[in-house]
Length: 372
Image (cartoon, rainbow, N blue to C red; front, top):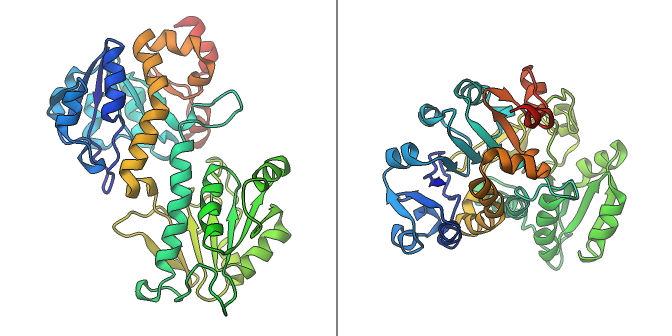
């Protein structure tokens, strides 16, 4: 199969889907790999390194026109829509539920598409989100550390345990990979860290690995209000179902928070768990609502692009090889967990969450594979 590795065009997106080491593996499997010139520069990988790994370096138009499978990091942008076609395969973070126009293009073109964010493993976890989740959580805490500084408009509080001063309180909503990433750094700096979650078993397991300055609370309204009142930083790490109209933290709740407190919304669902969240960029990352500083950058891992690209490429490679080695249909038939990431095929929407969010017709992928 011909695999095309594209240069990302989203502003401040420096990651790349494949690194030279993973390109070498694809070539060893007998595939032809086209890499757009400059695709890896933002992550520190030169065209020469890709060529040495066996890739064909080409301009964007050549990669888009020649490739059977488009291997990307971020969702499609309008200037990329024209390349979608029935005989093409798209594998990337699609986020179709947040981009109706993109969904229109995917369905009208008939392209076959798999979204990293929806692929599951045998334990019901999301293996292609995990590597970015840890980076996003850690990056979220580092953002709080940055914007707490008075020179950046913050309260002037150092988010660390300093003798003679009360340790700051960092509350984290969600004890998954994102939350644990944030907690690991926040705890290492000596802060008083609280993790709110609904899964007691998961919290008990995490308790074994985190230090004593991390406490675990069941996520209920009473504990959430306690954290809102006492926290210097509230970090949201839970994805909110797109079809829900309610919130975990409402605008009115921000009035409980301390002066100088901030919200870091790593999950970055617009009007999701945090009602006042709206996606921001690395160019313009923060805003205030009800006097509370919000940081809601939607691609935090891009700030750590080399680490992010290596970990993402390592995680996605086995799945991309399944598609490339077997063909799209056979790969979907053989791996029901990979099939969970199938967003669309032949003009049919197979991702239920997007169908609910955008009020579209949904086709059960498990039924589709019986008749295609």
